[in-house]
Image (cartoon, rainbow, N blue to C red; front, top):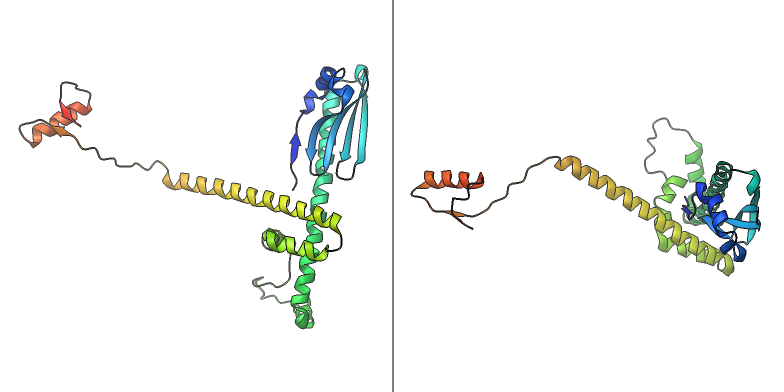
Length: 246
């Protein structure tokens, strides 16, 4: 799913308005948060009125807006409104991600259908029939979860399909290429991070408090082995009278 990037915390929005209403906000809105194609802006309507505006910056469309009269509101109310706006923005962004993933999935299905075109009738009968003994192994029909963790992560093939099915639509071809690259990179980075954390935890549990053996070579002056061992033990105990050659 898409990520929320926050620049102003909910509880600081009203304070930020008071701080910037006579400077930055006179020239431009302040970005509170971003998520995918959506941005939440803080705007100055007047000296005593602020506005929270959610926009789809890709389409340059205002999705929602809400104003607050500073003298009639509280920091808690503005913070709550900001939180709700961020939640709605995340929901909209997630819907966009799912719709675009689904569209790419459809292109994969079309290719899959072409691959099994000669066996279409046989495949349909196999899927319609019920078999209590089926264990779910070697399934030929695509499903969204296996698609996302398998074919979709093959970025080269995914970009090939986008180019193939949007060959005559440069605008949306570039949009889908950009989306697929960012989405796949995010998914693989999360998988890599989770895998690294799991491996680190497993190593920690495996190693536990295992003790390691370290060998040091020293020479101790003594008349025989027993005296040498005793001298070394006293040296290790902190007796600086013992001479040791390192």
